[in-house]
Image (cartoon, rainbow, N blue to C red; front, side, top):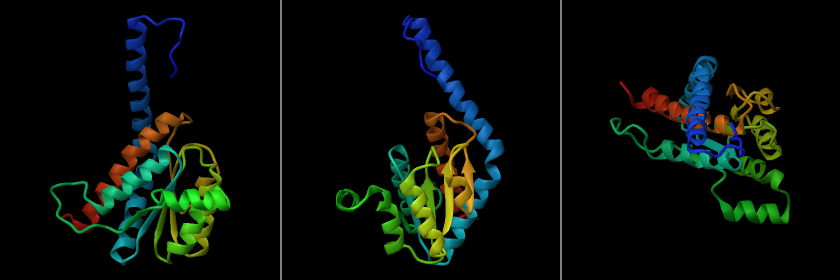
Length: 203
């Protein structure tokens, strides 16, 4: 997807923009076919947990950390203005910068999400783990901790990595391009949140 620096004409730049849009859209179209069942399963798992009075925990790094806060906001706030509802219990484990920086400085960054899962998670909760590579050590440790506490796990990832083999439900975007995986994760997260609202509050 990177532009050849040897040709910086306006025509080549416009072609790069168009091709990048098309390539990203192709990944999303392929994901619509390959990930639909897993997305439905994830939304149902989340809805069932919330209906029982449990909560949703989310963890990720970098852009995926922002995704966690975005998704938690959609659940706690509201995504469909046509559906009136209360806030849903969702916590982005990426948002507490004091804990994350303090624990990482004093101990080990690989344990920041595991520590929070052990302290804040309870049986029946759901952990959403987002990792484009599927190999982030702190994400894998968090999933392992969740499994030991009877917390269901959902992984949003790409084609490779260990994460997909550790979670209860794995939504694997059919790409090995980090940017396209992240972009499709955003769409996936919005769809899951919309489905949760419909399952819990729609007609």
